[in-house]
Amino acid sequence: MTTSVQIFNAIKVFLIEIGDISYFAVRFFKEVFTKPFEFKELIRQCYNVGNRTLFLVGITGFILGLVFTLQSRPTLMEFGAESWMPSMVSISIVREIGPVIIALICAGKISSGIGAELGSMRVTEQIDAMEVSGTNPFKYLVVTRVVATTLMIPLLIIFGDAVAMYGSAIVENLKGDVSFVLYFNKVFGALKFSDIIPATIKSFFFGFAIGIVGTYKGYNCKNGTVGVGEASNTAVVYTSLLLFVIDFIAVFVTDIFY
Image (cartoon, rainbow, N blue to C red; front, side, top):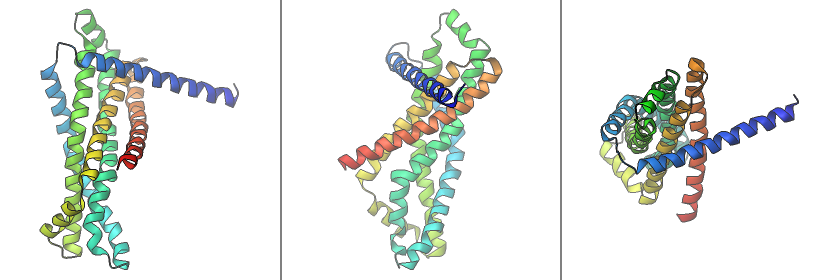
């Protein structure tokens, strides 16, 4: 088989999978507004998504604030612009760095976990058993997890952004003798609604992408236990790519309207 044929087949498979994911997403929007509503399972999934990822997001945000400030401070000192540090860090983290980095961390943690969990349920025929017993497995397993990630990822990103700015404030307090009150006064003085609102809106799309890809890969898992590992790995890859696409579109649209 020639290289061109292999490339063509790879592109064909990729486009077919995009179509399948799109159909999966359409089915989600049909099911999410129909009864019965699985509120107890939704609350449980929200707790799982938030509680299991909170510590990792906190550590990531804290190190992000520390490193970003430590790396930027020498450059600003050369121009005598240390006073701009709180404004630069807050705007950079809130608008772009925080949401993207934390969403990627959540993609690796949450999307792979959902893919592996549902994949193991598929290969052990638990999902088939739910269908036979008259339960709607899509409603119970997919809808609740996608809604949970859509709701919880923005909260995790806000938490991560806050911890990142706290880490930055610690560096400024130790290196530049800047009080926490002065630092956060400058932070809130620099931030505008045009910085916060677009970042918050796109974080909901990040959460939806993490949930929909993870559930799709797990729900349609094949090839036994080997397929569970493949579902988990490909869920992370596809989610990460989708996050970058969503972020590009969000930045492009924000640039037009703001």
